[in-house]
Image (cartoon, rainbow, N blue to C red; front, side, top):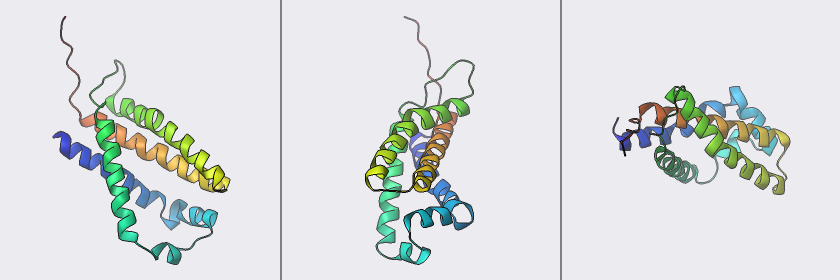
Length: 142
């Protein structure tokens, strides 16, 4: 797959997963309650700018993760290998930062848990996709 297309699609994954994950019928209501907000208050303000900046950030994360995506691990499927790298190598440090910031912001345990699981899942799926479509490294004799 064209690497630019892969990065673009990979960058959309957190947005798509977030749309589903934070839907009121899944974790959205619990997340809003953990923040003390409603759907109406979330619609206030520059929603387009928030979504635009979040999408650009997701694209940058995808671009960075794609730099490692051709790495292969014998005995692993590229999907599982990519999920591991996305969730563990990028998601775990992100979760630690989220928790640290959330503690200072006095976020509830529910809020911290919902956001942490989202990012582990979103980054894991981004990695799984990028690793699955990347051309594998070619070993050269030397």
